[in-house]
Amino acid sequence: MTAFLVFLADYLTKFAAVEFLSDGPIKIIGDFVKFELFFNTGAAFSLATSKTLFLSVFAMIVAAGILYFTSRIDSSKWAIGLGLVLGGIFGNLTDRIFRNPGGLQGPVVDWISLPYWPTFNIADSSIVIGSATIVWLIWAQIPSRSVPK
Image 1 (tube, rainbow, N blue to C red):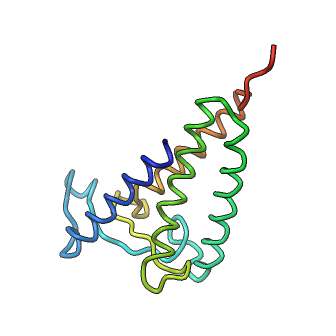
Image 2: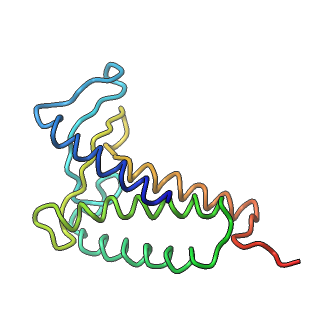
């Protein structure tokens, strides 16, 4: 459910960004927070812009691993963390597949702009928050499965 909600929020906000931000940015809090349309062909922070196909394949492998792992968990905390990452992966992967030129090489729509920070989207935020959650779960030694009594 988490993955679906993240995917839906990401899809709808990217649709709105393409529709309403094509004429230029909208200032939300002065120059601190702006909604600004940007098409990112790379990974986070616009790194690896010439490696779009590799990034897409890597994202599919990670998604497959998460789907495999989720069938073996019963912890709601782990489900939320993994769902955040999975929803974000699907959100950005959808852009890679369906945005021109397609074929896993399309650009990702980014639209949230902060000073001194690369433009990002809901999917990016979800991946970061979900990954941080998973790191915390591992650090706190919270099991992904209930221990049989």
